Every structure is written in structure tokens, then in C-alpha cells.
Image (tube, rainbow, N blue to C red; front, side, top):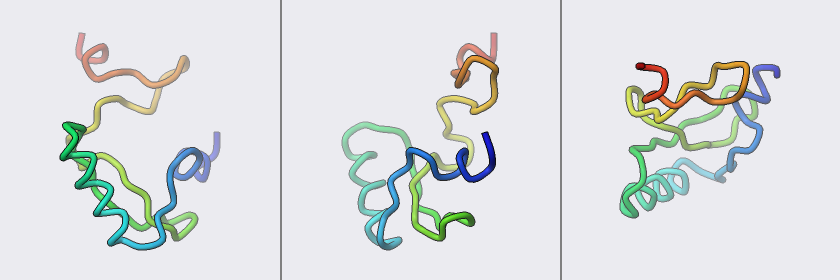
Length: 73
């Protein structure tokens, strides 16, 4: 998997930061994780992702994402 696939594949590309921030607020309002909108260095679109320190899983692992609760054990 290359850097582009890790950064962009499967993520929603929002037309503006405003739209991304609106969706992040909506997710938080529904009880979801703390998200933020950011400009992607690869595709230059706006994506949303977890705020630093608020991720629920790590991307590394030979068998897919590793949940932080599993990683700590």
C-alpha cells in the first residue's frame, strides 16, 4: 500500500473546509469520536480524521488495523 492509498483511499473528499468541519461536528454530535477537517497533501481535497491523540486504532499491522485497547495489552 503506497502513501496515497493510506492517505486518501476510502475517505470522503469534501469540497471545502467548511463542509468538512460541518460533518466533523455532526459526527461528534451523534456521539462519535473527536474529528477534524484537514487539507490532504496528496489529492488537495479536504478529508476528516481523528484529532491527534483521539485515534481509536493504529493503521499498522499485518492483519489490518490494531485497536488501541488491543495494542496496550
